[in-house]
Image (tube, rainbow, N blue to C red; front, side, top):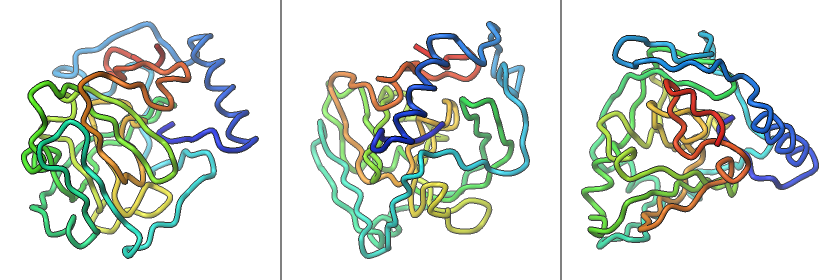
Length: 220
């Protein structure tokens, strides 16, 4: 599961189910793996498609409505329209993705803006150590700054040569491929740099704060 906001009855039922999964340790295999030696994390299965997993709240974000705010503990906060975001240096990337619901997909081709480009632009304060990613649906997820500051982390707008669809988080979503997919917030509209950690939606609802697939960090 890579998004969710807890806004309606259907959402509440699913969140309660996920909390029960966390309490019961569902899907856990109790094994770990070395990512340098093993490509498929423990308990995962390969898929060819890209499953859509959400709670039914898919915001419609037109190019005119898109806005990405990058702020918090930074020296140079930014607020970008879509054309301004697209004017930033662009790069291609290929990576796998792993969902906590046990599916993985290999060799995804992305295009977007590297997280390191964003970091360089806003210049985080020396004591900034965490990042909170916000989505236009009200979702948020947290990670350490050193996890965000990786060469394979991007804000992506294209997948397999085409714009990312709304159901998968377009026009722009986060991509943190070394972590379970719930850390890659859809419909991203704010990147907040923090001095102290602040758990996001699923992290407050039983999921692991770190989310390393090879350590099988599904639940906290």
